Image 1: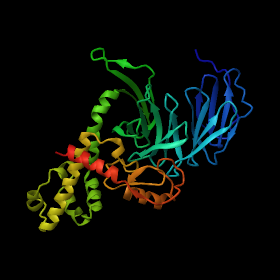
Image 2: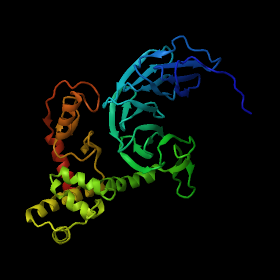
Image 3: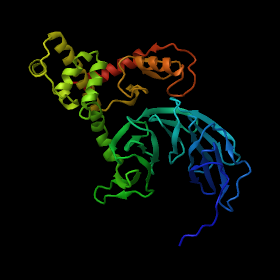
Image 4: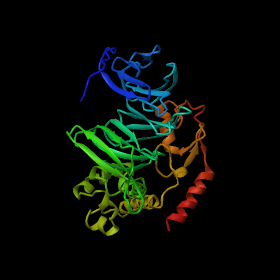
Length: 384
């Protein structure tokens, strides 16, 4: 039996989201406000509505304790509120400034994710209110997010239909096309499932799409970790399309070869198999110097793949590019970055820190020679 017990009509425009805590109901709307109601009698709290956002509020969610509410908006911010008095605790700006479509707390309340319309994803420290990690998906807006019950990983869904699994350090563990016309929602079951033989725990995940389908997935953190290296390798090699190869050629200052590679349908897998003979005989590249340059760049790519298969320590990875650093420098925020990446960031982001989102006290970059030596030693060990 289903029975309507109450109707709330306080918002002045479309209501985008609602969320429950153990004692409250939160709603958010295109009217730029968030409203809080008591579950006892559905009366609106004295400090409601909560007002700060300058554009539509797309999502709201409670921390597991129910004491903090997060809201995110087209204005590019994610705001944390004290639910007991309506006080605004923090305003966290998406580094890209893009409209924020979804936000979600981790089960232990330590982290908060915010996903934006441009595909950028931020993992915030929900206690210090500082940016911890940032990343992005290839295509589409991020519209859905869910943490596993144990908090060891989380899943995002995009408007292009991609379902992506991330670990708690924002490393992409797995990604695949889940729904043809875009994902609308995803969530984990709170109860794990055991395989009964090896004692491994699995989590059930449901995803909903604009293709009129609901898909149920089994996700194992152990299996994901084992597959993460393979998935990262594919990200650099086998999954490259002919267009990806063309982009890579241009980045290596080899754009004159784009037409030849396209004519021969060279994708990522075939790129790694090229030899000096195939470059001369099959692709008809006559210049010895040009062939040597192509082979050298391909060897660098193979080296990167081999490095990934060994599992790069996280401290050797640039927080911006998520790739192994070659020329690490220390910025005035105290974090180390790939020199070229942080220089580009500073020039485009008005000197804000990629890790804290605060204004950098200085644009001075100091070479991190100690880290560079450690990376070189690691490479010598893992590239034999």
